[in-house]
Length: 357
Image (tube, rainbow, N blue to C red):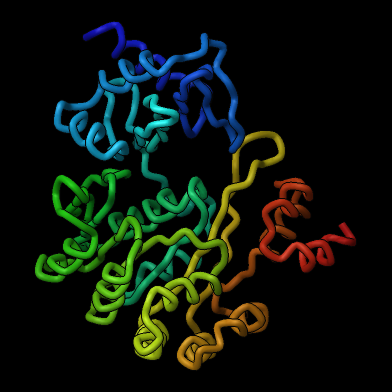
C-alpha cells in the first residue's frame, strides 16, 4: 500500500474521529471537514492540485480515472477497510482536481434510534404507493430512507430493490431480500432500471433520485401497480414537492399526473438537519399525509391550499408542518431560535408562533 493511500486513509479517519459528515479537498486550501453542519479546517498544510490528484487517484480504478478524465465528474461509493464507507464526488475547480467525501454509516439506524416520528412505522406497512423524502443536499434523506427500509427488513419478508447513484447504505438480508443496483455499473439509468424492476418481482423499490420525467413517470406507474415505492427530490416543503412533480410534465399531461398522484401518493416527508444546542444535529421533518381532502386538492389543481389543509387536518393522520416542529424544538431547548428562523420556509408564521417564547 502506498504512502498516498495511507494519507487519504488518515484524512478519512479524521472524519470519523471528529464525528464529521464530510471531507473536502480543494486546492489552495487545507483539508476541511464538516462538523454539525459547519466547515472546520484541519490543522494541515494547504493542498495543491497535484497532491489532491495523487490522493484521489490512489483509491480508484483505471476505469474510474478514465471516466473522470472524460466527464470531469465522478460519483462513487467506496468501502475502505478499517476506516469506513464513503460516498465520493470528484470534480475540477480552476483546472485542478477537487473532492468531497461523505461518510455513510455502516450501522443502519432504526426508526427508534433516529427518534423519528412513529408515523413512519405505519407508512412502511402500506402494500403499495409512493413515499417521498425530500430536502436539500445533506438533510439526512438517505438516513431516513435507510431506517424505513431497515424497519421493513426487520419485520417483513419482502424483496427490496434499491436503484442508486451511487449505492449508499448496504443492507444485510434479515427477513427481507435486498437487490442493490448501482446506476452506471449495474444499470444504465434510473428509468431503465425501474422499467425492468417490475419484472424482477419486487415488493419495495427505492429510487435514489427522481431526476427526470421518465423516472417520475415510471415511479408513479410502479406505485400504482402494487409496489411500495420510495423516492427523493431536492425540494424544501411538502406542497412544493407536489408542484415540482407536476411541473416536470407538459401541460396536456398534467391532469393525468395529478390524478395518478392523488391515488398513489402516500406521504411526503420534507426534512432538514439543524445543529442541536450542545452539539450534534436533529432532523426537522414536515410530514404531509395524503388524506382524502389532500388527494382532492391534488386532483383539482389546488396545491396552494395544501398547507392550510395540513394545519387543519392533523388529528390521527400524523401530519405536521415545519413551523410546528421548529416551535416544539425551540420550546424544548433542542435548537436555537436563530437557527429555526434561518431555515424556516415561513419565517413570519414562525416569528409569530415564537413571540411568547
